[in-house]
Length: 147
View 1 (cartoon, helix red, strand yellow):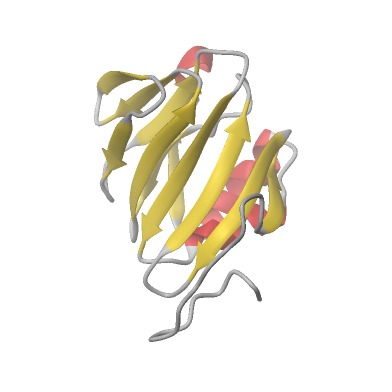
View 2 (cartoon, helix red, strand yellow):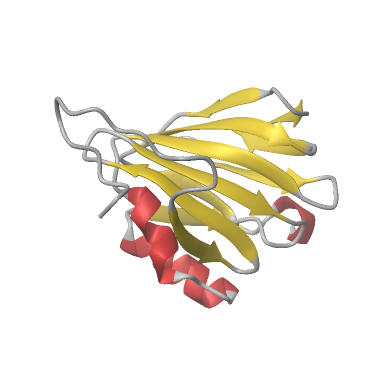
């Protein structure tokens, strides 16, 4: 796989490169996958966000490139605009709400592995919950806009 990092070898991906994946109608591009690290670029619209969930095994970081997002984590809400960076530590319930027509961000997870979940390409809430659970995450509530 072109996105698989190899230890002790340089890795470069051209602009626009990566493996296309999906989550509802969002555009997901796998940028890097390795046992230590996973990186995807996401372009997503309101309504396509995941339900409130918890990672047992991964820490997750978001770097917002375009748009505005409210990050919901650990019972707190953080407003984000382009250039914002937020951490979702493992074991803490989280999700996010897209506040603009679309938002584009990088999702970085350590260790790697859960980025492969997007290869399932869920199109319904039931498929999304199944994909999250398959990759070791627990859905603990609906998305805040549906609560």
